[in-house]
Length: 267
Length: 271
Image 1: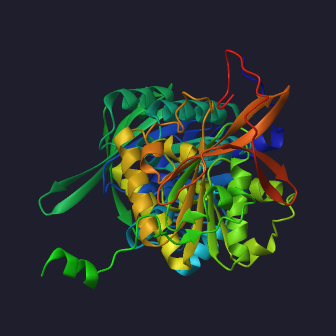
Image 2: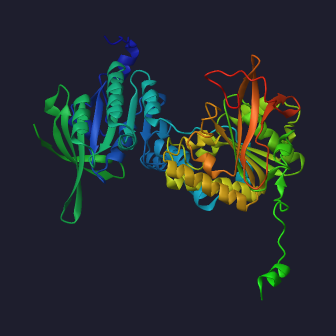
Image 3: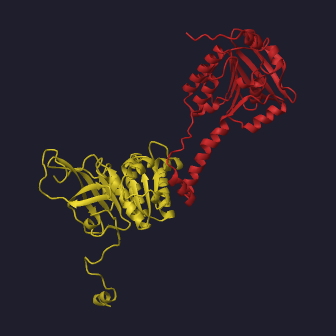
């Protein structure tokens, strides 16, 4: 049986039973927001606005030190630029796995290719002769990310954008196991967790597993209408509240970011 | 022009008088066994059982070269270089300044693998060529004339095909010879008995120019270390077994008397 956690009464009052999505109109459509303890999985198409939604999701940042944004594709500078553009809080925790991977793994691979193709220079040889230990920079990013989120306290808010990085480099069953652990952690600590994953190349079985683990499933899509693009978000699962299943067409405004327009009920 | 006229124009040295330049090992007794040293540019397999003194022999070979101002390199695959240097410090012949000054360059194979992106369980043809290129680069760039790889057995474990091992050793030996580098490849063997191979993969002994076997022999209840030069291209040499003693001042070789061996069903080499 899971360990029970006692929440502070004042915290319960402050945080309430639901948290904001960071998109006021979307909160209204979902009857107030997202229930505390929910894990959301967003299946995304390229160009559908999911990255912006992920950033917007952490923007309420009730407790900045308990808010974590993990990006696997963007660099710190780009994330800061977007947060500044929309005037979202900059004091949250941000981890850019993609950047870390580039500097730790890809740069090392590039250097290895240079050594293999061009050979060693004298200074390389001198450095090699003085290097006594292997620089073990191979990192298990999946475990690190899991531990980092598991270390967040009650009422945390976290985003992983996106799971593709891990699915491409790790055993998918290990990735699913990680999501399962994080879901349990979010539930126990009344946290809010959003995980995005690209629709492209995702195996049906993994998609099915992720959908069943999560409390809420969102699908971000983009289609062309005439010469315009239409971005939409479908809520196809909302645990214990099927009335919230909806399809929302949204646009991106400079003031509010993701802004739902019309609403179609799908259940 | 007849043959006698040609012979007058191009006088040949009488057989037995020509001798190749030697790399004087400096190891007490070994140069006498080799009638002056290892022919320059040779690749010599020093095959021995555990604890038979292979690493010490290899290191003394480098130290004596460094004493003479030669640039030397040691590639260690069996133990970390930190440990190797700590262990070798007990010998008076070794001075850590030789490492600090760059006369003896000690390379960790693990570090080299990491730099070359070869942190994998097995090597393919490209990987083998990268490794050869790296070693040859190092030898060429710093002008290494004495090289020890300790051990070639550990290194070859990563090369899965016998053909690739053969290519690796042959190409490496050929390139190092071209650069005038005398190389000792240390090989680990489980037994130095008469019928044993002198290498783990069976190909090293055929490709190398020389084979020095190190092992143990039981005499009067004592286990003695011995060294025997089995093969050395380009020089006459003694094939007798020599007792090897690892003393603080270095390796000492003395001829081993033929009598007094204890012979049994597990008789060791030369017993």
